Image 1 (cartoon, one colour):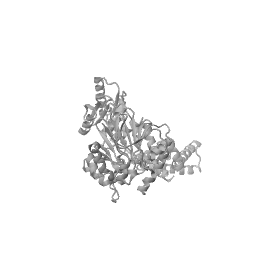
Image 2 (cartoon, one colour; image 1 turned 180 degrees about the horizontal axis):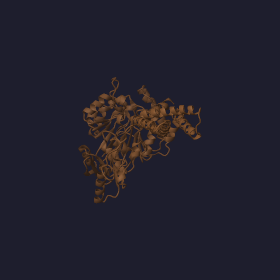
Image 3 (cartoon, rainbow, N blue to C red; image 1 turned 90 degrees about the horizontal axis):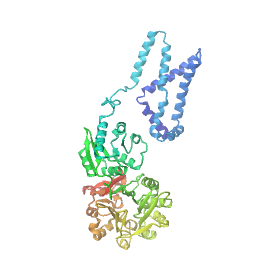
Image 4 (tube, rainbow, N blue to C red; image 1 turned 90 degrees about the vertical axis):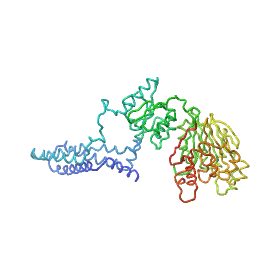
Length: 541
């Protein structure tokens, strides 16, 4: 309740501004109370008494309802997004009416016209001094054209219209920065957009793809690969963006051609239809909401296929369900790298009650028994592993080192999984026996190292050599410990994913090696992604 009251007070402060107009309002209320008490001793019309009673009573009732935490909470819930717009409740205060009525009452007490006019002039001065001049450049812009719309809007729409006519483009769907959202369709309603100004105000987007475009368009640095991926799915064939040579190069490399510009914006059109992302996969890394380390990835193509890797803790299950629902609620393959809590917990909880979620295949490691794992590593835990073993999963396939298969055209190559050789090299069976695998599209690949550690590094390099090389890599054991530096150096990935929150990435105690591994990967030229910027996304070409 205290939090609700503090929120209401902050909203009141937002509405109150400098506080001068509310001070004037309260002064009028106090005057009306005193005036009413004085009039009780004299004759007064019932209508005038009723007005003052209404103004005073209504204001008192408003403050009781709107500031009382219980009623405020109910109102916020009814408003839906009430926590952000509750300040608008204060629009219901009759500040202008009460101030005007009080001013008239005071003026009517003056005995001569001279006194009335003098007092009226004084009142106008007070109102002017306590208010804000609204006719300023921050609120009003000079008219640029007869449409009373920004010239940028008109010029961008005209460029798109001319290009569409010249190239036979029937459907025009445009992505723009927020400053253009409210005016594009005012000028040309035939230009569609994935979202409008309502999303900026905090309302829900039309669908998850549109929501992702909005998120990415308002994130720095911009991930143009991911933006163009979602743009392709949503049929957004035009993009207008402030002139920037680096952005132009990025968009042209992603299948967009520059079709025109004005003084401020470049306008682009996708020049190869919907085939730009054929046989390519959008890989997304998700982070934990509570500052915990975990592993959760999705891999999706533009045909609706979906692959999931791990999923995080049991407490992440509802979040995983939400993500998968937004992606269609059909998983072609779910990969569980090993049965640790931060990798398999969410899957175990979801699989027991999948609801409308359907899962075609599950790939996992035929791990050593819980007893053997604890015998080798007494410090470990097997809580989720034991829950995993109790699940009946008819679509389950256990993988082994050397296995090669494909899911929806995406190649899988298993380099390591629990087997006798792991026993010979390590006593940390649950980690070092986890699934280390590579996924390969037409041109690029990503190596998932799960929680495999240093003791496996030399074996993997000696056994597989160049086959391990990949453009992208998930760091072993969240980047803490994990594989040896010469292993990462050999892979030579251009992007390194650390499944780690900020406290682990920036540890200063020396207890964790994640900061050291981050520095190593950065100096080797790799871009580093962690939970500080999730969801992180790359296109696997």
